Every structure is written in C-alpha cells, then in structure tokens.
Amino acid sequence: MSATVIILFLAIVLLTLVITFFAAKRTQTAGDFYTAGGGLTGMQNGLAIAGDYLSAASFLGIAGAIALFGFDGFFYSIGFLIAYLVVLFLVAEPLRNLGKYTLADMINSRFDARKVRGAAALNTITISTFYMIAQLVGAGALIQLLFGIKYWMAVLIVGVMMTIYVLFGGMIATSWVQIVKAVLLMAGMVIMTFLVLLKFNFNIGQMFTDVKSVTAHGEAYLMPGLQYTEPLGTISLMLALVLGTAGLPHILMRFFTVRDAKTARSSVVIATWVIGIFYVLTLFLGFGAAAFVGHDTIIAANPGGNMAAPLLAQAVGGDILFAFISAVAFATILAVVAGLVLSGASAFAHDLYGQIIKKGNVTEREQVKAARYASLAVSVLSIVLALFAQYLNVAFLVSLAFCIAASANLPVILYTVYWKRFNTAGAVTAMLAGLLSALILVSISPSVFSPVEGAALFVGEPIFPLTNPALVSVPLGFLGGYLGTLLSKEKDIKRYAEVKVKANTGYKSSGVSH
Amino acid sequence: MGAEKEYKQEPAKEIDYVQVTKSRAFKKLMHDRKKFIVPLTIFFLIFYFLLPVLTSYTTFLNTPVIGDISWVWLFALAQFIMTWVLCTIYVKKAAVFDKQADEIIREMEEGGEKR
Image (cartoon, rainbow over all chains, first blue to last red; front, top):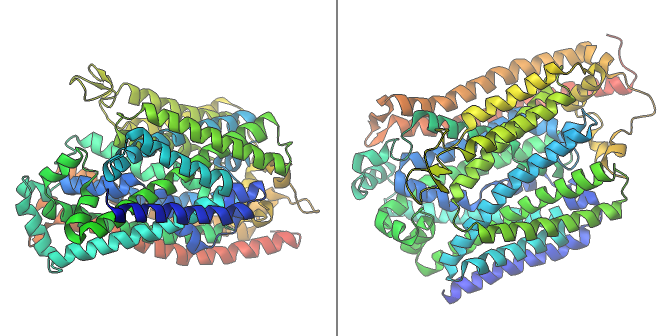
C-alpha cells in the first residue's frame, strides 16, 4: 500500500467526518434525521441520488463485466439507467406528495392499518439487508485487495464509518457524503475515459477494432451472448433491473428530502443525466481494461473482474491515478452503505416503533433517539452478517435485492396511487406475495442449488430454472394485490379521492412534512 | 407526536375530495396525464425489452454498421438517448400539469367551483 493511497484514503475519511460534524449540529428533529429537513435543492438531491445509487457493484462490477464479457456486461448499465424512467414517470412525484419519511408512510396515507405498515417495513428491512450485505461483502473484498488488509478489518472500517455518519449526522451527513462521492466518482470516470480515449487517439471505431483483436473472444466479444445464454434468464434479469429501482427503499427515501414534487422531479432528471453519463463511460472503462490491462491480469487479481477499473487506472495513469480511483471506490462504498443504514433504521424506528408500537405517540426527542438507536442496531447487525457472508456472491445478492424490490414494493406503490378499488387486504397480499415468491423462488433457483460443487450454496438440481426470478415473482406480486383486493369487500371511495387529489396536485404536501 | 397526526391536519374548512375529483379541471388533469404517461411508458418498456428479446432470439443485430460497431451497440446507445429525450419531454409536459394543479388547488381553497 503506497503512501499516496494512504493519504487519499485518510483525506476522504477526514472530509466525511468534517461533513458529519457540521451535519450533527444541524440535526435536531426527526425530520432532520430522516429527510435532512426536506430542504435539499434539486441539484443537491439529484447528485445525492446518483451517489446513493452508483454502488461499488456498478463502478467496479460493471467495468469488470464489460472488460471480461463485452456487450453482455453492458446490459446492466442499460437496465440500471432506464429504471429511472419508471421512477420519473410513475413513482417519484406521487411518492413525494403522499409520503413523509418512509415508503410505509406513503402507502398508509391511503390505509390506516398497522398490518400494511408492518408489511411495508418488513419489505424495507428485507431489501435493505440483502443490499447491505452485498455492499459490505463487496467492500470488504475490495478494500482487502486495494489496501492489503484482512477482510474483517475492511468490513469493520467501512462499518464504523457508516455508523458514525448516520448516528451523528443522519440524512444531512449521508446526503453530503453522497454528493461528494458522486462528484469524485464522476471526476474519476471522466479522467479515466479521457486517458483511455487518448490511447485510442479519440477514434471510437478504432477502439472497437482494437478491443476485438486483443481479447481471446475475438468477434464474439463485441456481440451479446458471452455471459447470458438463456433467453428467459436474460429477460428476467432485465425486468428486475428496470422495475427494481422504483422499489428500492434507500432510493425512494431520497424523494422525501426535497420540498415538493417539482423538486423531486428535477432531482430525478439531474440523477438520470449523471447516472446515464456514468453508465456510458463504463463502456470506455471496460474496453480500456480489456485492451490495456488484459483478461488474464484482471482475472488473476479477482475472478469476478472487480479489479478491472483500479488496474486500468494504474495502467493509464500510474500510481497516483490508482490511488485516486481506489479512494473513490472507498468513498463510493461509504456513501451507499450510509443510505442503506438510514433506510433500515427508518423502518425500525419510525414504522415499527414510532407508528406501530407507540401508535404515533412519541415526542420529537424520542423519535430522534429511537432513530439513533435503530441506526446503531442496523449497523451492528449488518457488520456481523457481513462478517459471516464473506463467500456469498455479491452480484447475486444485489440482483436479489432488485428482484424483491420489483416484486414486493412496486406493485403496492402503483396500486396505491393508481387503482381506485385497491384496499387494505390487497396492500398486504401484494407485498407478501411479492416478497415470499421472490424469496422462495430464489431459494430453489440455480443461485442456491447447483449440480457443480462450490458453484452455489448447496449441491443439487435447481427446481426453478431462472437465476433471477423476477419474470415470475413480479407478476405474482401484482396478482397477489389484485386477488387480495377482490376477495375483500372493503372499498373507500372518499379516501381514494383524497389520495388521488393529493398525489396529482401536491395539495397540502409541502405543509405536511415540517 | 409523529407523522400521522400532523398528516391529517386539514384546513379549517373540510374539503370534499370526491367533489374535487368530479370537477372539470381535475378530470382534465387526470385525462391529460393519462394520455401522456401511459403511451410513453408502454413505449419505453417495449423499446427496452426489445433489446434483450432481439439479442436472445435473433442475431441480426450483430451485423456491423460502422467498421466493427454493430447494430446492437447502436441500439444500446439509442436506449441512452431515448432516456434523456423522454426525461426532457417529461419535464416540459410536467410544467403544464403543474399549472393545471395550481389552478385546482386555488379553486379548492376558494371553496371550489361547482362543476
């Protein structure tokens, strides 16, 4: 580990601690803690969404996947981006207009039922846990590689940092860590892309021709089919990617940090531009790594290809760029896990404790206290889980989180806003049908059972053929909500009229949250 | 206390939301939104899924167009451009919806126009 790496690493730690220090002074109320007081601008929140979303899996995983598998690696980039159209067109504005701190608040604006809130909190906790374990395991492996320290030490460093941000600085610190990370990450991407293009003399056609000749795959590298050979499996994965984002609790939570639906909209637009540019650039990183680092070197450093981007930095920019990109990767991880802690904590402290157990009878001070305890508990729990999960496949955990989000959260969100007949029973069955079908199908899928020893958790024939079950579990989530609604006679036209007016006009929503 | 009570704070005068949903302005907003959002959502979902469907079941996207760059890369690029274009169109259109919504809120606060 070189001196430059250590200095940049410490600079990031210091910068984020300074942010947390100032944020802590401004965190007085539950609103400050969960939503930064709802006072972020569209630009700030847009960058924070990008910072919350672009995980190490995106930065390192996709660059590596493109470097190793060519076009097939790029599928993720496309799915992760177009997901924002679903968010923008269908979810962001009604969510902001109806909710306060959590997704459960939004659904409960239509149904005052504890079981609905409980189910929504359960979904948030499940999704955030899978996502969190994926991030921490990935972070541990990465930092272990970058800095040459032990896995448990790496997980502990990241874990302690995220706990500090959220515990003391709440959403204000988390948002600013995410904003800083987004800026650093984009700067790193642009610099690397520039250096890669420089090597190809800014001739993109030449880049394609060169890359084809340097990889062992030859022609096939530039065509789809190197990694995804099963048509239904590919389509199912793409479905989970495009619908999952609109159900990810830590992303949805970011829409409560702005004043109104208009600002929520402008933040999605900013995020979509930043994220889109980012994913276009992953192509240059992937191709650059394939050309200037080489397949064998990438595989030798990490079989999943996760080291492609840092190795490329070394190849095109020397030790300094390597140190910078490593530091950026570290910041990337911190920003994402902090967002996850916050969303998990909000489900425990606000939904389960504040609204269900205490039935809303909690003072502002008690709310903040509960939120802090919950953050600490969520952090400790995830660190412990991550320590035991070292050998789980990170990509599998992330795609599972997207699948559960798409199956368990998206149907209930859409029904709540757009379906007049929808009722309490339907809300519960939609959430549980999506959650259970996703979990059960994954547990009997090739991700868990493989005839080849060591390829999955257990040895055996998978009962369900798709690695990612979204193609079946998302329709089941919608079907569950539909049948549950029809089987119950309950119907509240008045309440839906209120929800419809508020969701579509933003009436009263700005006065509601603070 | 927390969220729920604050949330239900209504203005002194009770608003008849069912009446609002029946007002001409609100009906027009819902109609306009639907006419805009539904076709475009269907369009971008089809455009998106066309990519994995075509790459999984056909090979014609593998034909090179410019040098070694084949149709599949251009289609992928088109996905990005589509996203940005739809984003921009949405923002423009949403500004119109905002005006309609403000008008509806104004009417609600004034006690509502009767039809």
